[in-house]
Image 1 (cartoon, rainbow, N blue to C red):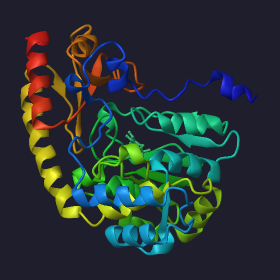
Image 2 (cartoon, rainbow, N blue to C red):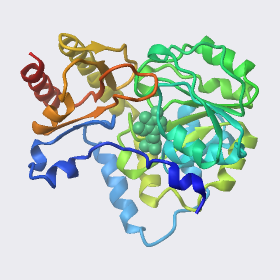
Image 3 (tube, rainbow, N blue to C red):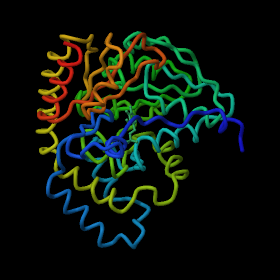
Length: 346
Ligand SMILES: Cc1ncc(COP(=O)(O)O)c(C=O)c1O
């Protein structure tokens, strides 16, 4: 086995409702606010598409994923040749690193940010540099390297990187720039149009957050034609399942439905921000979650006793002191969260 496999920690996805149910909680009483998913049900048309996919589940999906690419290209406003679908943005992070990083190449990961960038880079024996920016306020002067990971809106801080900063980095950086836009629909401000004029930019997107398909695993990259063909070449055969393929096409036909949900999520985010700021320091958010700095010992454990799962991100490089990241849930879920926090912290 390669030595790096012995030293890396597995990706920590946090707790899941199943973990609490195993401890005796009722499924109906558990609230999952830890993974930044869309908490609302899928529209009927998407459920129907998923059921239709089941009828052909004994067959492989066509490996060209043509209709999905066309729909994504139409949604994003780019050409089909620039689109690479995959089994989630996570698979694309790994594909990009595999495509460009040689052992000991420098990978720049501004922190605090999404931890899977680190794991994927370690697996390629990269030499990783972690510039730290308080509140992830990225400055355009970054160290040189083969690859840099930018995340906008950023997980876990929730803020966006200003367009002019992204532009300056893309233009001055000597390697490839991954811009992870997993939460971009909540901010409404994308830099994906820059791909057309910058061959070193790779934008990653996902269907797991705004489009509510986290359980089906599908995302995409927008990149230069050369990079897109490279990523296609190294993606595992058929990595997007027939069901994920059908569902992703279907959600792209229901954008109005998801825009309505977004409006509800943003309204709830503001309500949560107001309520939680009575107890915590809340970071400004352009995403569907809030990062909170707090001073309550055992906060996450006490919320767990109430069946509420939030993400404890204390100790993440670039965060000073105890922090939790809380996904904006449905109205009823947020009511329960607010009540529980009042009881624990009030
Ligand atoms: C910033 C960021 N990028 C990528 C991902 C992975 O998304 P996917 O579900 O598409 O693999 C996540 C998931 O939490 C994320 O927060």
